[in-house]
Image (cartoon, rainbow, N blue to C red):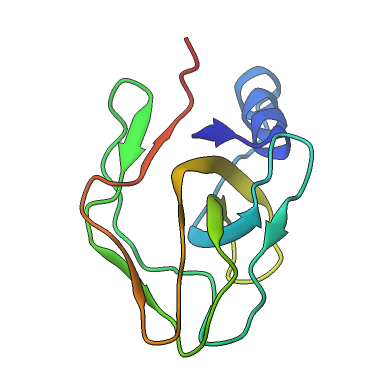
Length: 129
């Protein structure tokens, strides 16, 4: 998964200019139009029980990667737009996007469905080589 441009800049500032880069919580967001390093993409509408998901536990970084150590579940009370990508944010609404990625397969979510990511399904990386 790709590091967002603002997060990349924050990481460079922390590394080369002794600037703080502290993230205390992360939230998973779903996108119908996947963001990239410069565009914001289109996050799903906050309706039908959609909201960013917080509270997951993450692995210790290894080889530039982290992954989810807990199952991540979201349940819809109505139809959602198709999920084509995900993002990681610093807060539950608004905030800074840290990572973003296009999903290999679009997820269709109808009323009563749950979106589930098993342990290790979500892998975020700062290594691009």
